[in-house]
Length: 489
Image (cartoon, rainbow, N blue to C red; front, top):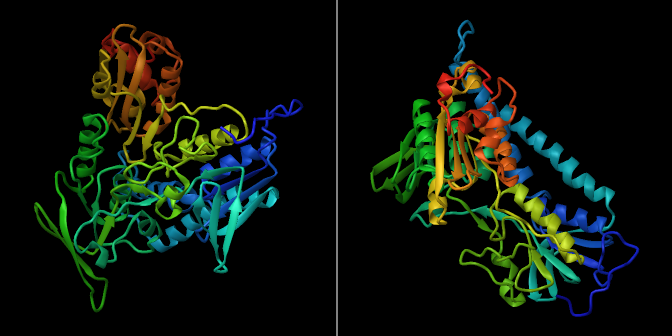
């Protein structure tokens, strides 16, 4: 693993390898900061943190998780005002000032970036922030093109690549010549388009499409296949139905073959999309077809770092690349692109870079899509289990059977549990439900704890809660829950 034999400090509880004195970290997002902070805990006293963007913090706090969830929540509030289900409370169309909403959103982004990133730098002199773009000169040397148009050469005992990802732009003829949005521009837009066309059918596309719809835009969604194709088909079908009920136009199995743009004289321009289903016209186009790793400018080949076909850095469960002293974490790797995965990977990378041994187990990975109803999954679904040769039993409980959903007058969705047939151990859960993201972690803990369906059915769940639906679904493996009394044990 190292050029010299590892020497650990007997007096140091962290087991720090004394030959490791400096780290270089490319990027300043969640993976980078998690790595830096754990490395300092383990005794590292010099860390070069390199960032090429004008602000630190990476995608999540600046242009991803934080601003998108604020926008989604504000859109939910607007939707409730005009479409809530409760008698005796007047419904009304809210006045939407998107510019004011964006200002509040960006202020919260600024506050979180300050608290979680900038203040941490101030309180940790071990971290030297270098503004610039890094690339490998060779496996041991980084070249950093700094803001002053100078090139600084750095050598470190260990290097972490944590450069994140960027929106993936499909090669649609004519697209590059238009002022299309990615999620970055959409989240910062101070006005609402009259008609927004969204190309994409996965997480970001669906979250933002529904948010703009609820804020007042007409929305048309182009899906190359179906919604959330990699999940259980019932999830995409249920979400499709929910979106159409709210007024969204969804065109499944539809692709744009060309994009044209004509600038208006008195107002914004007009997009024309040629598709295999005919032409579409709109005044704004949002591209949300996935994300691509930010590795193109790193010169990874010069360092002997192996990447996948799309440029993602190939790592093992210890975040090691094909170079033993170079590690990688976060969206730039072959790991799932979630901020909590990135942070966990950064922490474990720091341990391994400094002589420890920490693996990242992704076997039980809860995932949430912040639509309404929310999508939340963990473990395997039936199709994936069958691909792995696992014989399963499953049950699906519609939300008409969950008391909390009835009390909320919102029974859209279902809870589905998948069990290994021989042992009846829970191996998967798929949830389509309002607040489904608050439900899924209980299922994740149950899977990690190797609980059986009966174990889950026997647990005490508070009434009335949505998570009680897990217990009720587990009971359906042996009972008809419609014949049970309230809170039946």
